[in-house]
Amino acid sequence: MKPFLKWAGGKYRIVDRIRAQLPPGDRLVEPFVGSGAVFLNIDFPAYLLSDSNADLINLYRVLQEEGTDFVEYCREYFTPAANREEEYYRLRELFNRTTGRHRKAALFLYLNRHCYNGLCRYNSSGEFNTPFGRYKKPYFPKKEMLSFARKARRAVFVCKDFRKLMAGLTPGDVVYGDPPYVPLSATAGFTEYSRGGFGLEEQEKLAGLALRLAGEGIPVLLSNHDTAFTRQLYRDARLTSFEVQRFISARGENRNKASEILALFRGAGGQSR
Ligand SMILES: C[S@@+](CC[C@H](N)C(=O)[O-])C[C@H]1O[C@@H](n2cnc3c(N)ncnc32)[C@H](O)[C@@H]1O
Image 1 (tube, helix red, strand yellow):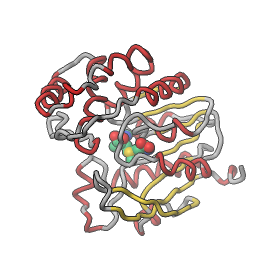
Image 2 (cartoon, protein in one colour):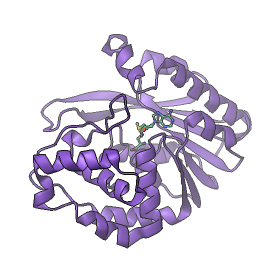
Image 3 (cartoon, protein in one colour):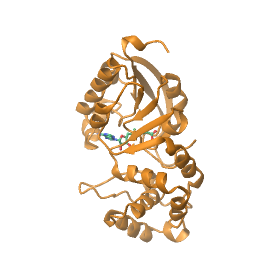
């Protein structure tokens, strides 16, 4: 099942690798749900899905509550008239001003499909500021939204920082944590990755929480780039590494390979499946 949003760092293409490493449990907890690629493609009896992006969680909740009616409402924003530069900036402004959760959710979907590269970027005042994407005919993901809404019947969505979410879990839970990536090289910019509010300190805190939860009988699988830094960070976990093809630019002419690491933290009592 394909996610209906374009999302940086989405894991749709490596979901089989994740499935192979994820232990079974009563509930899958995702502190960094993003596009929901893992939730959509791995089966658990229940899901607790969180992200610090309030616009994302608002959209998921509205879709969960209103299903088909909301999908039809969103369609109004996928017309040739709405795919003009001037109209894009008018709707982006409307999104930044509106307080109605229904309209805000539909506009967030509109922006995701009409903005440059599907990039979700805010300025320092918290306003969405990605420029117009100039796509010929943005795809309206009706089928994908309906599948998401069906599966969301077994899910609870919350907007929390990962530290808060991971403080309230119980045995039976299994965590898949996919934080913003660490940079591929130290010079690729410490500033670049701490800008999004997720720096070295957060990466270390997450690894510490994973180790603690594992000790309490709650397995945690973390994803990241495979670097010397993450190997050190996840030294207490069982590591699996593999290469993935990345498409860096919009048109895909800049392709390169980066290795991905999966780190499974599991308490001594629960090593066997
Ligand atoms: C790599 S993406 C997750 C992608 C997701 N697994 C998917 O397949 O689409 C990382 C996510 O972490 C969220 N995030 C960033 N900082 C966070 C924080 N402190 N607490 C919770 N979520 C955070 C971002 O909004 C983003 O959606």
